[in-house]
Amino acid sequence: MRMVVLGLGYLGATHAACMAELGHEVLGIEVVPEKRAQLAAGEVPFYEPGLPELLKRHIDSGVLTVSESYAEAADFADVFFIAVGTPQKKGEYSADLQYVESAIEELVPLLTRDALILGKSTVPVGTAEKLSLRADELAKDVSVEIAWNPEFLREGFAVEDTLHPDRVVLGTFPGDRAEAVCREIYAPMLEDGTPFIVTDPPTAELVKTSANAFLATKISFINAIAEVCDAAGADVKAIADAIGYDARIGRKFLNAGLGFGGGCLPKDIRAFMARAGELGAAEALSFLREVDNVNMRRRTRMVELTREVCGGSLLGKRIAILGAAFKPKSDDVRDSPALNVAGQIQLQGASVAVYDPKAMDNSRKLFPTLDYALSAADACEKADVVLVLTEWQEFVTLSPGDLEPYVRQRKIIDGRNCLNAENWSGAGWLYRA
Ligand code: UDX
Image 1 (cartoon, protein in one colour):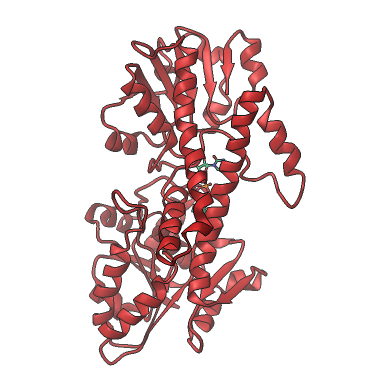
Image 2 (cartoon, rainbow, N blue to C red):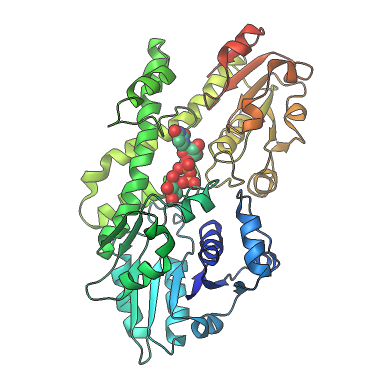
């Protein structure tokens, strides 16, 4: 099938390459010139394991092409995926829908055949219906159907999650052809038994927001328990293991530590609260404010703990920060807990040296005033304390001997509960988590 993907960020580039992998002919639209040039040359402008090989193969074979032209898009196909960003509005909780809206405003007047627009971006409930009304106004003698087909991919596992999703969800208006089209698009996965949930657009929109709200809640739940463990001298990891054996609870997403960041969970729970407020249901989601508070408190707690380990003041101390990405296997630093902590520590008078295996360029752009190191060892040069803030494998496998020649003091804080405490304590380090 021929199809267009509007927006080639983390979500759109992965979706476009994966649709080509499923055998479709795909045109990707990207408005940022540098990103477009890279993608057109078969390069991925961000770090995502497995994606560069897939993208290059399909760009080289010509099955996947890239353009900036909406006119070309309107001509190319009659199935369109919207994969543009829906960031948090500045100074507000709600989602900024300007990119989704402008995709509709630009595309629909150019359509000369009936078309199906499938939304992938995470949007507030009610968006598909609003866009559908607007598309009817903009369409010139053609019928434009809008349906929502949310995406659940995780960065770092984006290709795997797109090609082998846990489920495919479609929210469509009664009588529309979206279901038949999606059955054809996703045929290989549906034949493999992937559950296909067909519902109405508001439900599909809410499936996505509810899933992210639940994941965020799970993380903040265990982090709240971690606060109690700190006070009581108990071991939160053992608690997560023990309660995780209960199949109703499950062990996944119960890793206590510095909490969640990234381009999705933090802004999605805030947008969800904002939307519930607009619908008169604010009270139903008031617990999400606490989920957000617990999460933000982790960052402050890490700074306090570092100060404590430094003897009460950060002034003049040198702190090594290992990890800048919001999670391993990603170069994404949007709302990164690690960089937030680095910034706070610097503000309190310490010098920080940050190292991340993949996120250095993005970190420099977002936090130009931090000091950046060339390697983990380089970051640890004369460090008073080492902080592990993103659990990259190369940090998890560090041994005390790897850092000893560099540090000023043998003190380490494990912000992700990812190190072997006994190894470090046994080697004479002060280990805190
Ligand atoms: C998330 C959802 O998982 C995905 O389904 C959705 O499509 C987009 O948002 P992503 O943001 O890529 O994906 O990362 P995820 O793996 O969910 O991690 C989010 C954050 O939670 C990271 O900062 C991670 O470090 C943190 N986290 C995760 C924890 O602190 N503890 C955990 O147990 C799990």
